[in-house]
Image 1: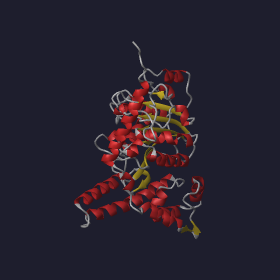
Image 2: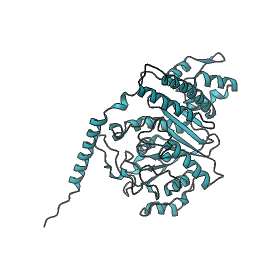
Image 3: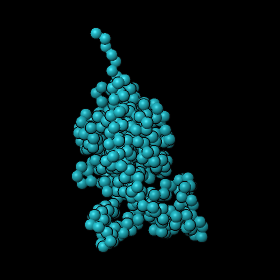
Length: 402
């Protein structure tokens, strides 16, 4: 009996299936995210005002200046002058890479208070529908929560679905900084959740910070919940392409390059966030020591070596994560390429025991969170590799320096 290799045919059918799924998504969800923004935004208005502003009789530096030059500019100002700029141009200063982080926190509090008042007014605007009133109420309550005492908001943009980033720990003194990069359906309203809190950026970053502190109380670490990019909305065309990832990669690169001091940086990229990290990898500065992905649909690369980064690349996936059923391929810009936990990809595959599905990787008590924390503090010898990943164990037994 003659045998035939059916692999090529199977690959073709999988590609056609992937394309069919995308077209169904287009038919049901459309291009809604692309048309969701207003023509002008509060951030743009603040940046425009800054461009025409002055302090002590001198023009303000261009917002697109190198972060180091902007940092130098702020050292020439006294406390009163800095505070005045934060209150006069809150969104410009609050989102300015190069501005002192404590000043950014203060500026974003000013901006949040203003936007809270705007939404309170919209709640009672007779021109809005009941749905509009409800949306205004949800946003107002989110701003209330972000204004809680002690919260450190590093970035904030109320436009459209909104963008935000929050810091846990002290960025100015941290020797190691962890950045949590979330995936689809991440925006201002989903930045924090009460139900399934560890599936949202605030819960993820907070859990990681506490785990790092538990692993080494003396470690000088900080964690950033980074939802400062426009993530895809649902499983539509945006999530099947790299468009949002490419836009986000520019913003992530700018953030990392502007972090104060000489801290080492580890990225924790969940779901579509791993697509973003894969796109950004080759342009990230050398201070990025580790890129860890969880529940990844792909990193837009066939192999880890093709990411062109000196950072260690780690990957994990829970056995119950539905992402494993997504075709790991790229056809005509659709799909995100090879599976990062496959042996051929070349990442160091970590144990995700206890994660329980796609949204459980940062759940306290899981092996996945413990592994993330050990990477975050540089304790590489303490990570747990996946059972069948010999390359990971070999690398650890040979010694991995921090």
